[in-house]
Length: 426
Image (cartoon, rainbow, N blue to C red; front, side, top):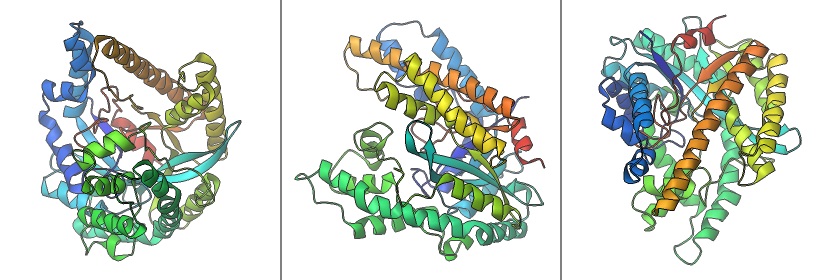
């Protein structure tokens, strides 16, 4: 029997929409996922194909393979941005649902925002993935409650200061140019969003994610400001049908108000984060296994800079693979990272199609997206093999109701669970 893992997920502790407990419940409910439920996650491909009377054999085959991945998802990793909030709550919910008795595993990690000066294009946002383990291993479900609490306490003592420093800089950025961008877009339509409102909203989100008495919460873990905080405040002002819809319509990648973590003087450089993590690992009780998140995402972003909207052009993609590959070489050969996220579903362009021509064009765009995911996955696996580093994989899910979905992304993620243990072997 082949089992699968998802080592890249987000909750409302950072920029996800589901609480840590909700994500835990979704993970535990996957065993009975139906074919129709999977096809629903492959929208709009299934919808447009049906409307156009196209042969759906390939899509149905993809859905069946996807259902198999979901029904055999064994390991989940929580990797919220720059925060450990919600760790204890997700673990508690998994225990309540009998996760260990059903053979499930839970890893605590984080996705760290930093900045890197890429060759030819200058500074660009770059994310690191870290997964935590101690002498007892990485699976928090394999511990007694007391052992798990000791792990979380040591994790807090060893790493919380770094996370708080990163969040402090990023939050200043959110409160300034990113808030200004949102307010300018809706100028004259609604009252502007204030700094006080954003801070209050982030605290409400944290309360949803983290019990007041949790070890991390009482340790004064800073709360990161995120896109969903803006979505909640805009919805309260009458924008959109729901906070989830506002997030999708305005803040999803490449949407009109998508505001990435733009590198600036407030963003900690990647080299500095890597030095600090590796320095901590020499004395920490809980060590961080360090890797590079979604290199395919940087390839896509850099190719877009080179080619514009035609970012699948051969010149743009080829040059972007070389630029990102050079950065990976530097990190790996210096021993700063142990893995890269080779298996990653990437992104899909938003559907706003009503006519037959628009639907056909969008289906062609989605096919290009799938082909890019396939090629970039093969490239990342080959790069990891050449450098003798390890592979990770995850959906980067931010919602239990929207794609990319936990475990299978857009239907093209199937990261084998047996690779998880290799990430933690020393």
